[in-house]
Structures are given as structure tokens and as C-alpha cells.
Amino acid sequence: MVFSESILSEQCLVQARGLVSSIENGDEDAAVGHLREISRINETKMFQEIGRLTRELHDTLVGFGIETEISDLAVHEIPDARERLSHVIDVTDKAAHKTLTAVEEAIPVCRELEESASKIEHQWKRFISRDLSADEFRELSREIGGHLEISADRYSKIKAYLNDILMAQDFQDITGQIIRRVIGLVQDVEDKLIGLIKISGSLDGEDNKLAKNPAEKVLEGPQVPGKESATALKSQDEVDDLLSSLGF
Image (cartoon, rainbow, N blue to C red; front, top):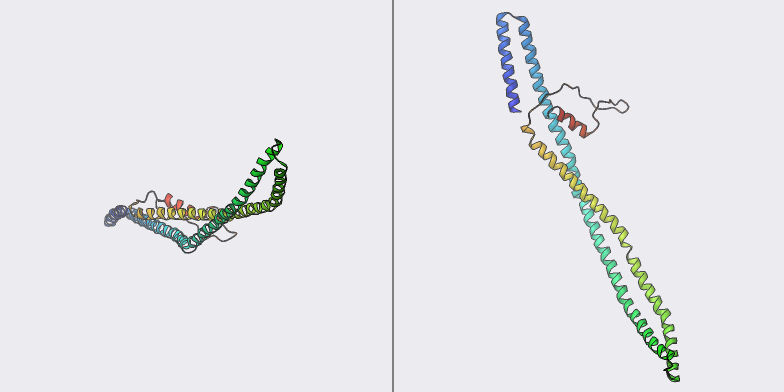
């Protein structure tokens, strides 16, 4: 920008000298031409300055918007996400504890049924082989009756334990929703930080840019509903593209 301003100042100085010379020589047409050229140079300089200020204002406003969003995330969303993740940990811990408790209580019941059935099976094989005496057969009959009596109760307990295990798994739906929400929040924070880094980089490099081929363009004013112009800029991206095309 300093280099560009020095060129414009030198051009103005050349035209000013030419203007003085034309006046001294009485060349009215040449004098008017020098005045027009000085006016054009000043307009170009003003255009570049307006463009530079517009670019800085645009980047500042965009950056302010992103910083505000990041601030909102830090104040509201992140604490909320922390609480949600803590809730996920609590729910998961309770479900795991409930599941382990049900399994631990079901194992002895299953072992009892297994031992009873194994004992009856052994005696039953002896009965099939005609190795049981009458007294042993009567004892086997009592064991079978006892096994059948306790089986209904034990199977009901096992069914209840399995149902507890099943119900404990309902945490997966709600925790899945919470985790997906937190993942979305992390992605949002990442996008905002990337945008902030991009803006910071563009502002740092702004002083080193040279204005290139400024185009004469009439900018649209604020748009009134129902009176929108087809050439009006409708988004921050379009504003940014326009400024870039003008060399700012």
C-alpha cells in the first residue's frame, strides 16, 4: 500500500508540474488535461483507500461474528456438553452395575439347576441299565419330583435376571443421541476456530497486499424486501469475493 501511494504521489507531482508549465505557456487545453488527470489519480487513490477500509471492516465484522459464536460455545454449549457426557458416564455405570449384579445372582441359580439335573441324569442312566434297587428308585423319584418343584421357581428367577439385563441396555439409545450431539459440537467448534484462523491470517497479510486493477463498480445499497436487485450482494461470501476481485 505504501509503494502504491508513492507511485500515485509521484504521478500527481508530474501532472502538477505539467499543469504549471501549461499555464505558463498559455496552453489551456493542456492545463485542463492535467487537471483531469490529477482528479483521476485522486479518485483512484480514494477508491483504493475506500476498498481497503471496506475490506478491513468486512473482515472485522465476520471475525466478530465468529468470535461471538465461539464465546457462546464456551459459555453455553461446552458446559452443557460436559454435563451431558457426565450423564452418559453415570448412566453407563449404572447399567453396567445392574447387568453385573443380575449375572452374579443368576449364576448360582443356574449352577443349582445344573447340579440337580446332573445328579438325576446319573441315577436315570442306572435306572435304564436296571442297576437301581427299589429303594434307590424311590429316592430317584423323590429327587425328580423335587427338581421339578424348584425348576419353575428357579426359571422364573433366571427370567427376571435376564429381563433386568435387557432393561439395563436401554441406556444405549439416549447415550448415543448425547454422544452424537457432542460430536456435532466438537465439529462446530473446529469449524469456528478454523474460520478464525483464516481471518487472522488474512488480516496479518493485508498490509503487504498491492492493489491490482481496481474496477469501477457501483455498489448496491441496502436491499428492501420486494425491491431486491439481481446484482446485489446477498451473502458474506459474495462480499468477500467482490473485495478480492477489486484487489482488496
